Amino acid sequence: MKALRMLFSKKKKPAKKFHILAADEEVGQLISLIHSSKTIKQLQQIHAQIILHNHFSNSRIVTQLISSYSFKPDFITHALSIFRHFPNPNLYIFNSLIRALSDNSFYMTSISYFLLMLKSSTPNHLTFPFVLKSTAALQEPSLGMQIHTNVLKLGLISDPLVLLHLLDMYAKVGLLDYACQLFDETSQWGDDSPTSALLCNVLINGYCKVGKWGKAMELFQVMPEKYGSTWNTLINGLMKAGEIDRAMDLWHHSAEIKRDVVSWTTMINGFSLNGHHEKALSVFDQMLEQGVKPNDQTIVCVLLACAKAGALHTGTRVHEYILTNGFTLKKGITAALVDMYAKCGSIENASRVFDMAEEKDLRTWSVMIWGCAINGYLDKALHCFNTMMATGIKPDGVVFLAIISACLHAGNVDQGLRFFDKMKHDYSIEPTMKHYAVIVDLYGRAGRLNQALRFIKSMSIDPDFVIWGALFSACRAHKNVQMAEYASEKLLALEPKHPGGYVFLSNVYAGAGRWQDVERVRTKMKNKGVAKDPGWSYIEIHGQVTSFVAGDHFHDRSDEIHLKLDEITKNAREFGYMPETEWVLHNIEEEEKEESLGSHSEKLALAFALISEGQ
Image 1 (cartoon, rainbow, N blue to C red):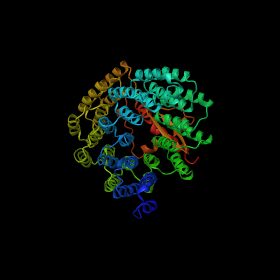
Image 2: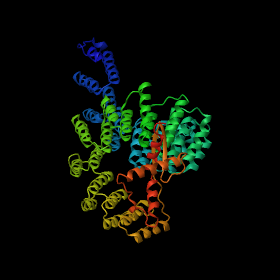
Image 3: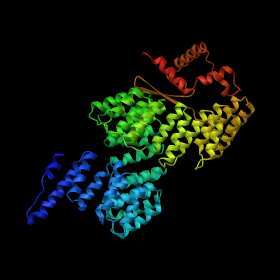
Image 4: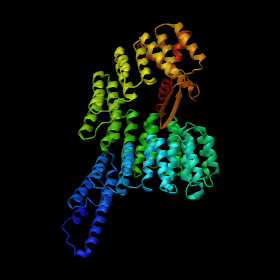
Protein backbone atom coordinates (compact mmCIF):
# COMPACT_ATOMS: atom_id res chain seq x y z
CA MET A 1 0.00 0.00 0.00
CA LYS A 2 2.07 2.89 -1.36
CA ALA A 3 -0.35 5.57 -0.16
CA LEU A 4 -0.27 4.13 3.36
CA ARG A 5 3.54 4.21 3.46
CA MET A 6 3.56 7.81 2.21
CA LEU A 7 1.02 8.91 4.80
CA PHE A 8 2.99 7.51 7.74
CA SER A 9 6.55 7.67 6.35
CA LYS A 10 7.59 10.39 8.76
CA LYS A 11 6.21 11.96 11.86
CA LYS A 12 4.70 15.32 11.04
CA LYS A 13 5.35 18.33 13.26
CA PRO A 14 3.11 21.09 11.90
CA ALA A 15 2.98 24.59 13.36
CA LYS A 16 0.36 24.97 16.06
CA LYS A 17 -2.02 27.14 14.00
CA PHE A 18 -2.08 24.57 11.24
CA HIS A 19 -2.41 21.57 13.57
CA ILE A 20 -6.22 21.19 13.26
CA LEU A 21 -6.12 21.58 9.47
CA ALA A 22 -3.34 19.00 9.15
CA ALA A 23 -5.16 16.58 11.45
CA ASP A 24 -8.36 16.89 9.39
CA GLU A 25 -6.37 16.28 6.22
CA GLU A 26 -4.81 13.14 7.72
CA VAL A 27 -8.24 11.86 8.80
CA GLY A 28 -9.55 12.48 5.29
CA GLN A 29 -6.63 10.55 3.79
CA LEU A 30 -7.21 7.64 6.15
CA ILE A 31 -10.90 7.48 5.27
CA SER A 32 -9.96 7.57 1.59
CA LEU A 33 -7.54 4.67 2.16
CA ILE A 34 -10.24 2.69 3.99
CA HIS A 35 -12.61 3.16 1.04
CA SER A 36 -9.97 2.17 -1.51
CA SER A 37 -8.86 -1.02 0.29
CA LYS A 38 -9.58 -4.05 -1.89
CA THR A 39 -8.74 -6.88 0.46
CA ILE A 40 -9.17 -7.66 4.16
CA LYS A 41 -5.39 -7.73 4.52
CA GLN A 42 -5.13 -4.14 3.24
CA LEU A 43 -7.95 -3.06 5.56
CA GLN A 44 -6.21 -4.67 8.53
CA GLN A 45 -2.96 -2.87 7.68
CA ILE A 46 -4.81 0.45 7.68
CA HIS A 47 -6.54 -0.53 10.91
CA ALA A 48 -3.14 -1.19 12.52
CA GLN A 49 -1.81 2.21 11.46
CA ILE A 50 -4.92 3.93 12.83
CA ILE A 51 -4.26 2.39 16.25
CA LEU A 52 -0.50 3.04 16.04
CA HIS A 53 -0.98 6.74 15.28
CA ASN A 54 -3.69 7.31 17.90
CA HIS A 55 -6.59 7.88 15.50
CA PHE A 56 -8.81 5.19 16.98
CA SER A 57 -10.70 7.77 19.05
CA ASN A 58 -11.87 9.54 15.89
CA SER A 59 -15.54 8.66 15.35
CA ARG A 60 -15.44 9.42 11.60
CA ILE A 61 -12.64 6.93 11.04
CA VAL A 62 -14.19 4.27 13.29
CA THR A 63 -17.55 4.64 11.52
CA GLN A 64 -15.88 3.96 8.15
CA LEU A 65 -13.87 1.05 9.56
CA ILE A 66 -17.02 -0.67 10.85
CA SER A 67 -18.74 -0.14 7.48
CA SER A 68 -15.79 -1.54 5.53
CA TYR A 69 -15.48 -4.66 7.66
CA SER A 70 -19.20 -5.30 7.18
CA PHE A 71 -18.75 -6.07 3.48
CA LYS A 72 -17.33 -9.45 4.51
CA PRO A 73 -19.76 -11.54 6.62
CA ASP A 74 -16.85 -13.55 8.01
CA PHE A 75 -15.34 -10.38 9.48
CA ILE A 76 -18.42 -8.94 11.16
CA THR A 77 -16.79 -9.89 14.49
CA HIS A 78 -14.07 -7.32 13.70
CA ALA A 79 -16.75 -4.64 13.36
CA LEU A 80 -18.24 -5.67 16.71
CA SER A 81 -14.82 -5.64 18.37
CA ILE A 82 -14.11 -2.12 17.08
CA PHE A 83 -17.45 -0.93 18.41
CA ARG A 84 -16.90 -2.46 21.85
CA HIS A 85 -13.47 -0.84 22.22
CA PHE A 86 -14.73 2.62 21.29
CA PRO A 87 -15.61 4.73 24.36
CA ASN A 88 -19.06 6.35 24.28
CA PRO A 89 -20.11 5.51 20.67
CA ASN A 90 -22.20 8.23 19.03
CA LEU A 91 -25.21 8.03 16.72
CA TYR A 92 -23.13 7.55 13.56
CA ILE A 93 -21.13 4.65 14.99
CA PHE A 94 -24.34 2.98 16.19
CA ASN A 95 -25.92 3.46 12.75
CA SER A 96 -22.87 1.98 11.05
CA LEU A 97 -22.94 -1.14 13.24
CA ILE A 98 -26.73 -1.61 13.03
CA ARG A 99 -26.53 -1.43 9.24
CA ALA A 100 -23.55 -3.83 9.13
CA LEU A 101 -25.40 -6.40 11.24
CA SER A 102 -28.63 -6.09 9.29
CA ASP A 103 -26.89 -6.33 5.89
CA ASN A 104 -25.15 -9.52 7.00
CA SER A 105 -28.36 -11.14 8.32
CA PHE A 106 -27.49 -10.77 12.01
CA TYR A 107 -31.00 -9.45 12.56
CA MET A 108 -31.45 -10.21 16.26
CA THR A 109 -28.08 -8.69 17.13
CA SER A 110 -28.94 -5.65 15.04
CA ILE A 111 -32.11 -5.12 17.09
CA SER A 112 -30.13 -5.62 20.34
CA TYR A 113 -27.75 -2.80 19.46
CA PHE A 114 -30.69 -0.60 18.43
CA LEU A 115 -32.16 -1.07 21.91
CA LEU A 116 -28.75 -0.30 23.44
CA MET A 117 -28.55 2.83 21.31
CA LEU A 118 -31.85 4.15 22.68
CA LYS A 119 -30.23 4.47 26.13
CA SER A 120 -27.71 7.06 24.93
CA SER A 121 -28.71 8.39 21.50
CA THR A 122 -31.79 9.41 19.56
CA PRO A 123 -32.18 7.46 16.29
CA ASN A 124 -32.47 9.38 13.02
CA HIS A 125 -33.71 8.72 9.48
CA LEU A 126 -30.63 6.54 8.76
CA THR A 127 -31.28 4.25 11.74
CA PHE A 128 -34.81 3.07 11.09
CA PRO A 129 -34.51 1.56 7.57
CA PHE A 130 -32.10 -1.14 8.81
CA VAL A 131 -33.93 -1.71 12.08
CA LEU A 132 -37.15 -2.21 10.12
CA LYS A 133 -35.37 -4.54 7.70
CA SER A 134 -34.27 -6.71 10.66
CA THR A 135 -37.76 -6.59 12.17
CA ALA A 136 -39.28 -7.84 8.90
CA ALA A 137 -36.71 -10.64 8.60
CA LEU A 138 -37.42 -11.76 12.18
CA GLN A 139 -41.19 -11.67 11.54
CA GLU A 140 -41.81 -9.54 14.63
CA PRO A 141 -45.00 -7.52 13.94
CA SER A 142 -45.38 -6.27 17.54
CA LEU A 143 -41.83 -4.89 17.52
CA GLY A 144 -42.55 -3.31 14.13
CA MET A 145 -45.56 -1.46 15.55
CA GLN A 146 -43.47 -0.17 18.46
CA ILE A 147 -40.86 1.13 16.01
CA HIS A 148 -43.66 2.76 14.00
CA THR A 149 -44.66 4.63 17.17
CA ASN A 150 -41.05 5.84 17.62
CA VAL A 151 -40.96 7.02 14.02
CA LEU A 152 -44.14 9.06 14.55
CA LYS A 153 -42.84 10.56 17.81
CA LEU A 154 -39.64 11.68 16.12
CA GLY A 155 -41.49 13.14 13.14
CA LEU A 156 -39.71 10.91 10.64
CA ILE A 157 -42.76 9.42 8.92
CA SER A 158 -42.40 11.86 6.03
CA ASP A 159 -38.89 10.64 5.24
CA PRO A 160 -39.23 8.62 1.98
CA LEU A 161 -36.72 5.92 2.99
CA VAL A 162 -38.20 5.41 6.46
CA LEU A 163 -41.73 5.29 5.03
CA LEU A 164 -40.67 2.78 2.37
CA HIS A 165 -39.12 0.40 4.90
CA LEU A 166 -42.04 0.80 7.30
CA LEU A 167 -44.49 -0.15 4.55
CA ASP A 168 -42.22 -3.00 3.47
CA MET A 169 -42.02 -4.30 7.05
CA TYR A 170 -45.82 -4.42 7.43
CA ALA A 171 -46.16 -6.20 4.07
CA LYS A 172 -43.49 -8.80 4.92
CA VAL A 173 -44.86 -9.64 8.38
CA GLY A 174 -48.31 -10.20 6.87
CA LEU A 175 -50.01 -7.04 8.20
CA LEU A 176 -51.23 -5.87 4.81
CA ASP A 177 -54.16 -3.97 6.32
CA TYR A 178 -51.69 -1.86 8.31
CA ALA A 179 -49.56 -1.38 5.19
CA CYS A 180 -52.59 -0.29 3.19
CA GLN A 181 -53.72 2.07 5.97
CA LEU A 182 -50.25 3.61 6.15
CA PHE A 183 -50.25 3.98 2.38
CA ASP A 184 -53.58 5.81 2.45
CA GLU A 185 -52.70 7.99 5.46
CA THR A 186 -49.47 9.23 3.92
CA SER A 187 -50.99 10.06 0.53
CA GLN A 188 -51.26 13.71 1.60
CA TRP A 189 -47.51 14.12 1.09
CA GLY A 190 -47.84 13.79 -2.66
CA ASP A 191 -45.77 12.17 -5.37
CA ASP A 192 -42.55 11.91 -3.37
CA SER A 193 -43.99 9.29 -1.09
CA PRO A 194 -47.02 7.03 -1.47
CA THR A 195 -47.55 7.62 -5.17
CA SER A 196 -43.94 6.77 -5.98
CA ALA A 197 -43.24 3.56 -7.85
CA LEU A 198 -41.25 2.07 -4.98
CA LEU A 199 -44.07 2.36 -2.44
CA CYS A 200 -46.58 0.93 -4.88
CA ASN A 201 -44.17 -1.90 -5.69
CA VAL A 202 -43.90 -2.86 -2.03
CA LEU A 203 -47.67 -2.99 -1.61
CA ILE A 204 -48.23 -4.83 -4.91
CA ASN A 205 -45.60 -7.41 -3.95
CA GLY A 206 -47.28 -7.86 -0.56
CA TYR A 207 -50.67 -8.47 -2.16
CA CYS A 208 -49.18 -10.98 -4.60
CA LYS A 209 -47.50 -12.84 -1.76
CA VAL A 210 -50.84 -13.57 -0.07
CA GLY A 211 -52.71 -14.24 -3.31
CA LYS A 212 -54.73 -11.01 -3.46
CA TRP A 213 -54.34 -10.54 -7.23
CA GLY A 214 -57.40 -8.32 -7.45
CA LYS A 215 -55.96 -5.84 -4.96
CA ALA A 216 -52.56 -5.92 -6.66
CA MET A 217 -54.07 -5.34 -10.10
CA GLU A 218 -56.38 -2.63 -8.75
CA LEU A 219 -53.44 -0.69 -7.34
CA PHE A 220 -51.47 -1.32 -10.52
CA GLN A 221 -54.28 0.04 -12.70
CA VAL A 222 -54.72 3.29 -10.74
CA MET A 223 -51.03 4.17 -10.75
CA PRO A 224 -50.65 7.42 -12.72
CA GLU A 225 -47.42 6.19 -14.29
CA LYS A 226 -46.34 2.58 -14.54
CA TYR A 227 -42.58 2.26 -14.46
CA GLY A 228 -40.70 -0.81 -15.60
CA SER A 229 -39.95 -1.68 -11.98
CA THR A 230 -43.69 -1.86 -11.24
CA TRP A 231 -44.36 -4.24 -14.12
CA ASN A 232 -41.44 -6.38 -12.91
CA THR A 233 -42.71 -6.38 -9.32
CA LEU A 234 -46.17 -7.58 -10.31
CA ILE A 235 -44.83 -10.23 -12.70
CA ASN A 236 -42.36 -11.43 -10.06
CA GLY A 237 -45.09 -11.62 -7.43
CA LEU A 238 -47.35 -13.63 -9.72
CA MET A 239 -44.53 -16.01 -10.66
CA LYS A 240 -43.62 -16.64 -7.01
CA ALA A 241 -47.24 -17.50 -6.30
CA GLY A 242 -47.35 -19.96 -9.24
CA GLU A 243 -49.71 -17.80 -11.32
CA ILE A 244 -47.75 -18.39 -14.53
CA ASP A 245 -50.56 -17.62 -17.01
CA ARG A 246 -51.34 -14.30 -15.32
CA ALA A 247 -47.64 -13.41 -15.29
CA MET A 248 -47.25 -14.27 -18.99
CA ASP A 249 -50.31 -12.22 -19.89
CA LEU A 250 -48.85 -9.24 -18.05
CA TRP A 251 -45.47 -9.84 -19.71
CA HIS A 252 -47.03 -9.64 -23.17
CA HIS A 253 -48.84 -6.43 -22.22
CA SER A 254 -45.60 -4.94 -20.91
CA ALA A 255 -44.29 -4.72 -24.48
CA GLU A 256 -45.34 -1.05 -24.38
CA ILE A 257 -42.38 -0.32 -22.11
CA LYS A 258 -38.74 -1.01 -22.85
CA ARG A 259 -37.84 -4.40 -21.39
CA ASP A 260 -34.57 -4.13 -19.54
CA VAL A 261 -32.30 -6.81 -18.05
CA VAL A 262 -34.38 -6.90 -14.85
CA SER A 263 -37.57 -7.64 -16.85
CA TRP A 264 -35.98 -10.55 -18.68
CA THR A 265 -34.31 -11.90 -15.53
CA THR A 266 -37.67 -11.81 -13.72
CA MET A 267 -39.24 -14.04 -16.39
CA ILE A 268 -36.28 -16.45 -16.52
CA ASN A 269 -36.25 -16.84 -12.74
CA GLY A 270 -40.06 -17.14 -12.63
CA PHE A 271 -40.20 -19.99 -15.15
CA SER A 272 -37.34 -21.84 -13.43
CA LEU A 273 -38.98 -21.33 -10.03
CA ASN A 274 -42.13 -23.04 -11.32
CA GLY A 275 -40.30 -25.98 -12.90
CA HIS A 276 -40.53 -24.75 -16.52
CA HIS A 277 -36.80 -24.91 -17.04
CA GLU A 278 -36.87 -25.34 -20.81
CA LYS A 279 -39.03 -22.21 -21.08
CA ALA A 280 -36.59 -20.30 -18.85
CA LEU A 281 -33.72 -21.20 -21.20
CA SER A 282 -35.83 -20.27 -24.22
CA VAL A 283 -36.51 -16.81 -22.72
CA PHE A 284 -32.76 -16.38 -22.16
CA ASP A 285 -32.14 -17.08 -25.85
CA GLN A 286 -34.83 -14.54 -26.78
CA MET A 287 -33.18 -12.00 -24.49
CA LEU A 288 -29.84 -12.37 -26.28
CA GLU A 289 -31.56 -12.14 -29.66
CA GLN A 290 -33.14 -8.84 -28.55
CA GLY A 291 -29.65 -7.49 -27.82
CA VAL A 292 -30.16 -7.23 -24.05
CA LYS A 293 -26.97 -8.03 -22.13
CA PRO A 294 -27.53 -10.21 -19.05
CA ASN A 295 -26.18 -9.24 -15.63
CA ASP A 296 -24.76 -11.47 -12.89
CA GLN A 297 -28.23 -12.28 -11.52
CA THR A 298 -29.43 -13.34 -14.99
CA ILE A 299 -26.47 -15.68 -15.38
CA VAL A 300 -27.08 -17.25 -11.97
CA CYS A 301 -30.80 -17.81 -12.81
CA VAL A 302 -29.97 -19.39 -16.18
CA LEU A 303 -27.34 -21.68 -14.67
CA LEU A 304 -29.87 -22.72 -12.01
CA ALA A 305 -32.36 -23.65 -14.77
CA CYS A 306 -29.60 -25.63 -16.55
CA ALA A 307 -28.81 -27.46 -13.32
CA LYS A 308 -32.43 -28.41 -12.69
CA ALA A 309 -33.01 -29.50 -16.28
CA GLY A 310 -29.69 -31.36 -16.59
CA ALA A 311 -28.87 -29.16 -19.60
CA LEU A 312 -25.09 -29.61 -19.69
CA HIS A 313 -24.66 -28.40 -23.28
CA THR A 314 -26.58 -25.19 -22.61
CA GLY A 315 -24.77 -24.69 -19.31
CA THR A 316 -21.40 -25.05 -21.05
CA ARG A 317 -22.54 -22.51 -23.65
CA VAL A 318 -23.47 -20.08 -20.86
CA HIS A 319 -20.03 -20.65 -19.29
CA GLU A 320 -18.39 -19.77 -22.62
CA TYR A 321 -20.57 -16.65 -22.81
CA ILE A 322 -19.38 -15.63 -19.33
CA LEU A 323 -15.72 -16.01 -20.30
CA THR A 324 -16.01 -14.13 -23.61
CA ASN A 325 -18.20 -11.23 -22.45
CA GLY A 326 -16.22 -9.71 -19.64
CA PHE A 327 -17.97 -11.27 -16.64
CA THR A 328 -15.96 -11.55 -13.44
CA LEU A 329 -16.17 -14.95 -11.80
CA LYS A 330 -17.57 -13.63 -8.55
CA LYS A 331 -18.66 -15.97 -5.79
CA GLY A 332 -22.29 -16.08 -6.91
CA ILE A 333 -21.48 -17.05 -10.51
CA THR A 334 -18.72 -19.45 -9.41
CA ALA A 335 -21.10 -21.28 -7.05
CA ALA A 336 -23.79 -21.43 -9.76
CA LEU A 337 -21.30 -22.88 -12.29
CA VAL A 338 -20.05 -25.51 -9.84
CA ASP A 339 -23.66 -26.40 -8.98
CA MET A 340 -24.66 -26.66 -12.65
CA TYR A 341 -21.75 -28.89 -13.67
CA ALA A 342 -22.17 -31.12 -10.60
CA LYS A 343 -25.93 -31.60 -11.07
CA CYS A 344 -25.36 -32.35 -14.76
CA GLY A 345 -22.93 -35.10 -13.73
CA SER A 346 -19.72 -33.36 -14.85
CA ILE A 347 -17.83 -33.37 -11.55
CA GLU A 348 -14.53 -32.83 -13.43
CA ASN A 349 -15.70 -29.47 -14.81
CA ALA A 350 -17.22 -28.57 -11.44
CA SER A 351 -13.84 -29.22 -9.79
CA ARG A 352 -12.03 -27.22 -12.46
CA VAL A 353 -14.22 -24.15 -11.91
CA PHE A 354 -13.94 -24.54 -8.15
CA ASP A 355 -10.13 -24.83 -8.21
CA MET A 356 -9.85 -21.69 -10.39
CA ALA A 357 -11.90 -19.58 -7.97
CA GLU A 358 -9.64 -16.99 -6.32
CA GLU A 359 -11.93 -16.53 -3.33
CA LYS A 360 -13.99 -19.33 -1.82
CA ASP A 361 -16.61 -18.54 0.81
CA LEU A 362 -18.74 -20.97 2.82
CA ARG A 363 -21.38 -21.21 0.09
CA THR A 364 -18.80 -22.07 -2.59
CA TRP A 365 -17.38 -24.87 -0.43
CA SER A 366 -20.84 -26.20 0.42
CA VAL A 367 -21.85 -26.33 -3.26
CA MET A 368 -18.70 -28.28 -4.14
CA ILE A 369 -19.24 -30.73 -1.27
CA TRP A 370 -22.87 -31.17 -2.39
CA GLY A 371 -21.67 -31.83 -5.93
CA CYS A 372 -19.35 -34.57 -4.71
CA ALA A 373 -22.16 -36.00 -2.57
CA ILE A 374 -24.78 -36.33 -5.32
CA ASN A 375 -22.25 -37.88 -7.69
CA GLY A 376 -21.11 -40.48 -5.14
CA TYR A 377 -17.59 -39.14 -4.51
CA LEU A 378 -17.34 -39.54 -0.76
CA ASP A 379 -13.53 -39.34 -0.59
CA LYS A 380 -13.52 -36.13 -2.64
CA ALA A 381 -16.27 -34.66 -0.44
CA LEU A 382 -14.26 -35.50 2.69
CA HIS A 383 -11.15 -33.93 1.16
CA CYS A 384 -13.08 -30.72 0.40
CA PHE A 385 -14.52 -30.66 3.91
CA ASN A 386 -11.09 -31.08 5.54
CA THR A 387 -9.46 -28.51 3.22
CA MET A 388 -12.21 -26.01 4.01
CA MET A 389 -11.63 -26.54 7.74
CA ALA A 390 -7.88 -26.01 7.25
CA THR A 391 -8.53 -22.60 5.66
CA GLY A 392 -10.28 -21.48 8.84
CA ILE A 393 -13.86 -21.53 7.49
CA LYS A 394 -16.24 -23.09 9.98
CA PRO A 395 -18.93 -25.42 8.61
CA ASP A 396 -22.57 -24.53 9.04
CA GLY A 397 -25.70 -26.69 8.96
CA VAL A 398 -25.77 -26.74 5.14
CA VAL A 399 -22.20 -28.04 4.89
CA PHE A 400 -22.91 -30.77 7.44
CA LEU A 401 -26.06 -31.72 5.53
CA ALA A 402 -23.93 -32.03 2.38
CA ILE A 403 -21.21 -34.18 3.96
CA ILE A 404 -23.75 -36.46 5.69
CA SER A 405 -25.54 -36.81 2.33
CA ALA A 406 -22.21 -37.85 0.79
CA CYS A 407 -22.01 -40.60 3.43
CA LEU A 408 -25.61 -41.54 2.57
CA HIS A 409 -24.90 -41.97 -1.15
CA ALA A 410 -21.79 -44.01 -0.35
CA GLY A 411 -23.69 -46.16 2.18
CA ASN A 412 -21.30 -45.24 4.99
CA VAL A 413 -23.70 -45.18 7.93
CA ASP A 414 -21.22 -44.92 10.79
CA GLN A 415 -19.32 -42.01 9.27
CA GLY A 416 -22.56 -40.17 8.57
CA LEU A 417 -23.59 -40.62 12.21
CA ARG A 418 -20.20 -39.33 13.39
CA PHE A 419 -20.65 -36.13 11.37
CA PHE A 420 -24.17 -35.73 12.77
CA ASP A 421 -22.83 -35.98 16.33
CA LYS A 422 -19.92 -33.67 15.49
CA MET A 423 -22.34 -31.04 14.19
CA LYS A 424 -24.42 -31.15 17.39
CA HIS A 425 -21.73 -31.47 20.03
CA ASP A 426 -18.60 -29.83 18.55
CA TYR A 427 -20.30 -26.96 16.70
CA SER A 428 -23.54 -26.60 18.69
CA ILE A 429 -25.59 -26.62 15.48
CA GLU A 430 -29.16 -27.69 16.13
CA PRO A 431 -30.32 -30.27 13.55
CA THR A 432 -33.11 -29.24 11.18
CA MET A 433 -35.75 -31.54 9.72
CA LYS A 434 -33.47 -32.09 6.69
CA HIS A 435 -30.66 -33.37 8.90
CA TYR A 436 -33.00 -35.77 10.66
CA ALA A 437 -34.41 -36.96 7.31
CA VAL A 438 -31.00 -37.82 5.88
CA ILE A 439 -30.10 -39.83 9.01
CA VAL A 440 -33.37 -41.79 8.75
CA ASP A 441 -32.57 -42.41 5.08
CA LEU A 442 -29.04 -43.45 6.05
CA TYR A 443 -30.35 -46.08 8.47
CA GLY A 444 -33.11 -47.10 6.05
CA ARG A 445 -30.92 -47.76 3.04
CA ALA A 446 -28.70 -49.95 5.19
CA GLY A 447 -31.74 -51.95 6.27
CA ARG A 448 -31.42 -50.84 9.89
CA LEU A 449 -35.13 -50.09 10.16
CA ASN A 450 -35.50 -50.56 13.92
CA GLN A 451 -32.67 -48.09 14.54
CA ALA A 452 -34.29 -45.66 12.11
CA LEU A 453 -37.58 -45.87 14.02
CA ARG A 454 -35.85 -45.41 17.39
CA PHE A 455 -34.02 -42.41 15.99
CA ILE A 456 -37.32 -40.85 14.83
CA LYS A 457 -38.85 -41.34 18.26
CA SER A 458 -35.83 -39.66 19.90
CA MET A 459 -36.01 -36.51 17.73
CA SER A 460 -36.19 -33.17 19.53
CA ILE A 461 -38.80 -31.92 17.03
CA ASP A 462 -41.96 -33.57 15.74
CA PRO A 463 -41.19 -35.62 12.60
CA ASP A 464 -42.83 -34.32 9.42
CA PHE A 465 -44.07 -35.94 6.21
CA VAL A 466 -40.54 -36.25 4.77
CA ILE A 467 -39.23 -38.11 7.83
CA TRP A 468 -41.99 -40.72 7.75
CA GLY A 469 -41.70 -40.87 3.96
CA ALA A 470 -38.00 -41.77 4.25
CA LEU A 471 -38.84 -44.58 6.67
CA PHE A 472 -41.70 -45.70 4.46
CA SER A 473 -39.44 -45.93 1.39
CA ALA A 474 -36.96 -48.01 3.36
CA CYS A 475 -39.76 -50.34 4.47
CA ARG A 476 -40.79 -50.83 0.86
CA ALA A 477 -37.22 -51.54 -0.25
CA HIS A 478 -36.76 -54.11 2.53
CA LYS A 479 -40.36 -55.42 2.36
CA ASN A 480 -41.20 -54.71 5.99
CA VAL A 481 -44.98 -54.50 5.65
CA GLN A 482 -45.75 -54.10 9.34
CA MET A 483 -43.53 -51.06 9.82
CA ALA A 484 -44.69 -49.69 6.45
CA GLU A 485 -48.28 -49.72 7.74
CA TYR A 486 -47.21 -47.85 10.87
CA ALA A 487 -45.34 -45.22 8.82
CA SER A 488 -48.31 -44.95 6.47
CA GLU A 489 -50.64 -44.12 9.37
CA LYS A 490 -48.27 -41.32 10.38
CA LEU A 491 -48.09 -40.02 6.80
CA LEU A 492 -51.84 -39.95 6.28
CA ALA A 493 -52.41 -38.34 9.69
CA LEU A 494 -50.08 -35.49 8.68
CA GLU A 495 -51.33 -35.02 5.11
CA PRO A 496 -54.57 -36.92 4.35
CA LYS A 497 -54.77 -35.47 0.83
CA HIS A 498 -51.19 -36.24 -0.18
CA PRO A 499 -51.10 -39.08 -2.76
CA GLY A 500 -47.67 -40.34 -1.69
CA GLY A 501 -48.85 -42.15 1.44
CA TYR A 502 -51.57 -44.04 -0.44
CA VAL A 503 -49.41 -44.91 -3.44
CA PHE A 504 -46.49 -46.10 -1.32
CA LEU A 505 -48.73 -48.28 0.86
CA SER A 506 -50.52 -49.84 -2.12
CA ASN A 507 -47.11 -50.64 -3.64
CA VAL A 508 -45.95 -52.29 -0.43
CA TYR A 509 -49.11 -54.41 -0.34
CA ALA A 510 -48.65 -55.24 -4.03
CA GLY A 511 -45.07 -56.37 -3.39
CA ALA A 512 -46.35 -58.66 -0.63
CA GLY A 513 -49.15 -60.00 -2.85
CA ARG A 514 -51.89 -58.58 -0.60
CA TRP A 515 -54.16 -57.54 -3.47
CA GLN A 516 -57.30 -57.00 -1.41
CA ASP A 517 -55.40 -54.46 0.69
CA VAL A 518 -54.15 -52.81 -2.53
CA GLU A 519 -57.72 -52.43 -3.79
CA ARG A 520 -58.85 -51.11 -0.40
CA VAL A 521 -56.16 -48.39 -0.43
CA ARG A 522 -56.87 -47.46 -4.05
CA THR A 523 -60.63 -47.26 -3.37
CA LYS A 524 -60.02 -45.06 -0.33
CA MET A 525 -57.78 -42.87 -2.46
CA LYS A 526 -60.49 -42.52 -5.10
CA ASN A 527 -63.23 -41.77 -2.56
CA LYS A 528 -61.14 -38.99 -1.00
CA GLY A 529 -60.45 -37.47 -4.41
CA VAL A 530 -56.70 -38.01 -4.11
CA ALA A 531 -54.82 -38.31 -7.39
CA LYS A 532 -51.13 -38.85 -8.07
CA ASP A 533 -49.48 -36.34 -10.40
CA PRO A 534 -47.50 -38.02 -13.18
CA GLY A 535 -43.72 -37.83 -13.05
CA TRP A 536 -41.71 -35.54 -15.37
CA SER A 537 -38.21 -35.91 -16.80
CA TYR A 538 -36.03 -33.49 -18.76
CA ILE A 539 -33.33 -34.23 -21.29
CA GLU A 540 -31.10 -32.00 -23.40
CA ILE A 541 -30.42 -32.97 -27.01
CA HIS A 542 -28.26 -30.72 -29.21
CA GLY A 543 -28.77 -27.80 -26.83
CA GLN A 544 -32.55 -28.17 -26.79
CA VAL A 545 -34.30 -29.21 -23.56
CA THR A 546 -37.29 -31.55 -23.95
CA SER A 547 -39.64 -32.69 -21.19
CA PHE A 548 -41.50 -35.99 -20.92
CA VAL A 549 -44.36 -37.05 -18.68
CA ALA A 550 -45.07 -40.64 -17.64
CA GLY A 551 -47.09 -42.39 -20.35
CA ASP A 552 -46.34 -39.59 -22.82
CA HIS A 553 -47.73 -40.12 -26.37
CA PHE A 554 -47.80 -36.47 -27.43
CA HIS A 555 -44.25 -36.06 -28.70
CA ASP A 556 -43.85 -35.66 -32.46
CA ARG A 557 -41.67 -38.77 -32.56
CA SER A 558 -43.71 -40.77 -30.07
CA ASP A 559 -43.95 -43.89 -32.28
CA GLU A 560 -40.17 -43.98 -32.80
CA ILE A 561 -39.58 -43.49 -29.07
CA HIS A 562 -41.81 -46.42 -28.08
CA LEU A 563 -40.33 -48.66 -30.78
CA LYS A 564 -36.86 -47.87 -29.42
CA LEU A 565 -38.02 -48.72 -25.90
CA ASP A 566 -39.31 -52.09 -27.13
CA GLU A 567 -35.96 -52.73 -28.78
CA ILE A 568 -34.04 -51.85 -25.59
CA THR A 569 -36.28 -54.08 -23.46
CA LYS A 570 -35.95 -56.99 -25.90
CA ASN A 571 -32.14 -56.72 -25.91
CA ALA A 572 -32.05 -56.38 -22.12
CA ARG A 573 -34.11 -59.56 -21.72
CA GLU A 574 -31.39 -61.48 -23.55
CA PHE A 575 -29.06 -60.51 -20.69
CA GLY A 576 -31.51 -61.65 -18.02
CA TYR A 577 -33.45 -58.43 -17.37
CA MET A 578 -36.98 -58.91 -16.04
CA PRO A 579 -39.28 -55.94 -15.29
CA GLU A 580 -40.35 -55.74 -11.62
CA THR A 581 -44.09 -55.98 -12.24
CA GLU A 582 -44.82 -56.97 -8.64
CA TRP A 583 -45.40 -53.30 -7.77
CA VAL A 584 -48.07 -52.83 -10.45
CA LEU A 585 -51.75 -53.58 -9.76
CA HIS A 586 -52.68 -57.23 -10.18
CA ASN A 587 -55.91 -56.61 -12.10
CA ILE A 588 -54.16 -55.98 -15.41
CA GLU A 589 -52.41 -58.52 -17.59
CA GLU A 590 -48.68 -59.13 -17.21
CA GLU A 591 -48.03 -57.63 -20.66
CA GLU A 592 -49.88 -54.46 -19.65
CA LYS A 593 -47.88 -54.26 -16.44
CA GLU A 594 -44.64 -54.28 -18.42
CA GLU A 595 -46.02 -51.63 -20.77
CA SER A 596 -46.94 -49.47 -17.77
CA LEU A 597 -43.42 -49.74 -16.38
CA GLY A 598 -41.97 -49.01 -19.81
CA SER A 599 -43.80 -45.68 -20.00
CA HIS A 600 -41.85 -44.06 -17.15
CA SER A 601 -40.76 -40.56 -18.10
CA GLU A 602 -37.06 -41.37 -17.54
CA LYS A 603 -37.22 -44.28 -20.01
CA LEU A 604 -39.01 -42.16 -22.62
CA ALA A 605 -36.35 -39.45 -22.29
CA LEU A 606 -33.56 -42.02 -22.65
CA ALA A 607 -35.14 -43.58 -25.75
CA PHE A 608 -35.52 -40.11 -27.29
CA ALA A 609 -31.82 -39.45 -26.68
CA LEU A 610 -30.88 -42.70 -28.39
CA ILE A 611 -32.98 -42.10 -31.53
CA SER A 612 -31.63 -38.53 -31.73
CA GLU A 613 -28.01 -39.70 -31.60
CA GLY A 614 -26.03 -38.75 -34.68
CA GLN A 615 -28.73 -36.44 -36.07
